[in-house]
Image 1 (cartoon, rainbow, N blue to C red):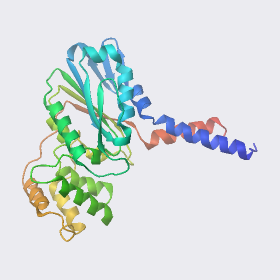
Image 2: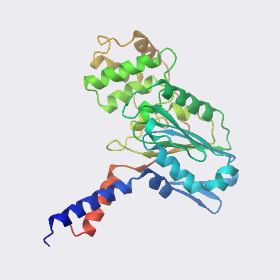
Image 3: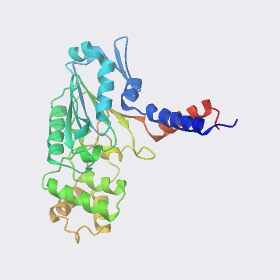
Image 4: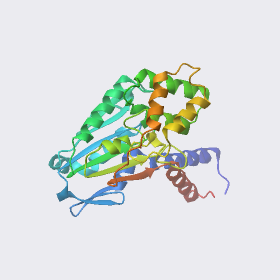
Length: 297
């Protein structure tokens, strides 16, 4: 069938929009959270509501606002009130808005993908919140792309300025996201499973919108709720590969990494579930289906 230029333009836009709409953050959360017959169903987890005293929502990412909106819409005012729901999500400053129960914290300026003091404060609040939970509480973590820079929490002995310098040097030297996160995880109390280890809730469920090909859970937002698959020795190797010492990276960073290399890493609790609810494949599939519907193959 011969199509006019206007028809081709309309089809292309519709196909593109189908892909975009398929990964709208609020819709992805709404599609994966349900309240049915006294059960809170989150992806493949089914949790009896009568066994949950409180719900705390935490997280970070550029899609954090939409994810939080979707979650509040599904749970509704009555359930959120009965479970004393509170929340804190670190987002870029241009994503901050007022929600009913979940606080959106501007953790970095828009378009500036590096850690800030505001991000450190937000991460401190998140760690404080999850550390105060009990066995009868549920923690829901919402993660999306950009979460690494939005969750800075330097380990003792390493400053925010140190982490900023490392991020700037490695990015400028051509390090990929996996190499960058290998280093950042070892210098953070929240990345590389640190958030899961700090959480005292009876259950921690993480919903993830992936911006990384292949959806490696330990790479997305530097894996705050999954086991770390890289080590302090790996981080040292990355820094050495990119001549970090010659670039002026603080010796305190190397001291910290050598100390961590000699220690046994903590384990992520078995009460943690991680689910990827959106990724590039979801968008591509939706776009493909719309293309077929319009007669393309």
